[in-house]
Length: 500
Image (cartoon, rainbow, N blue to C red):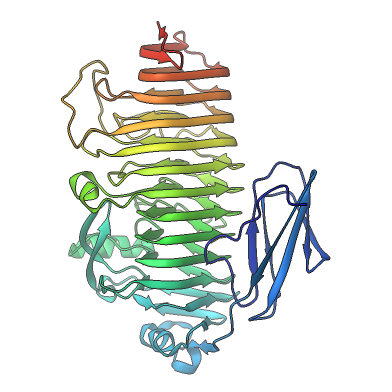
């Protein structure tokens, strides 16, 4: 009996583990390995650990009235390449960049470059195809705070190809090369020393700031179990990749994991950014961000449209977000974005659960975006609604524009964006400082088919909606002290009726 689909996310198979996911419809599921009980879970995912390399297993998941099975084979073991055997000291003082890179270069296909317990100070390193970088428990890969340890290369930053400082972890900087099957895993930590490095790179000013991890042009990227923190800008950035999975990762761009240290002056501190990527899965992860927790990107303005690589098929489930601005689609989405699902996630001290934002100049289409079964709250005083964020739930074609007339149309051209088919379903969001809901389309390009279903939104201000062709509201409760609970301009229902 096979009543639901069981899937192995892209690249989510290692020498000793297999991850499976499914659409959760029951409160609990039983997981079997080769017919024997393995565990029970209340999420829509399970990672089977402790497996043998190069071995086939059958995984069965049963819950509610459904059962599904799938077979998968673990990766073969290509050997372990301990960075200490290549000269790494791991004392937190010695520069271990060259030793780590020697281990990577020597790594055989399907091999593991092991960073064992210790603190390994490093500048930029470059991974290659068919390898795993394992930062083991008790180990720290600590980024150098010197700008000169990160050579300048040209790759995408904020939607445009730019001169950038290399990130702490990269692939080789040869745009003619396409990589495959890269895993970064382990229960250790990747600390990019972003507070000091931010100042050093800004002072030298030879390029845009690097990231903690930036993997480009790769088919099959797997981030598993790792803690990544203190990036000088966006933290985990994937560009032009196909098949990206983040499983049980922890990302901190605002403060350390114990909140003992705040990262101060860093800005643009997104947590995880899939940028012109296809088939992206994020589950069972925690992100505490200085900016957007997750931001779906695909290029900026004319250059993004010319490159024309959308981000599509993104599934974010059973995640926790503990600071920042939630899961965003945009604003650099000139290559387009579609088929984005955010489900069964919690947001605490987070300004907005979801935002879809694409201002004039971006062009292209953002479509088929769903936020479902999510709860959020923001009771802090750090931020207020402004041109960069406008509500606990918002869709915004006037993003980054401080003052605007929602009725003033401009000519339609290649830079005119279109946002359509966006759903917020089974959502509870409490904020004491923002709009409860903010929806703003362009008069020359209205939002299309926006659905609010079973939504309770609390805010300092009520709901504002401008320029929508097809608004559905079912069981929507706006809680606000605002005397103007609803303000609508140029809104049509799904049936084509005007809302006054």
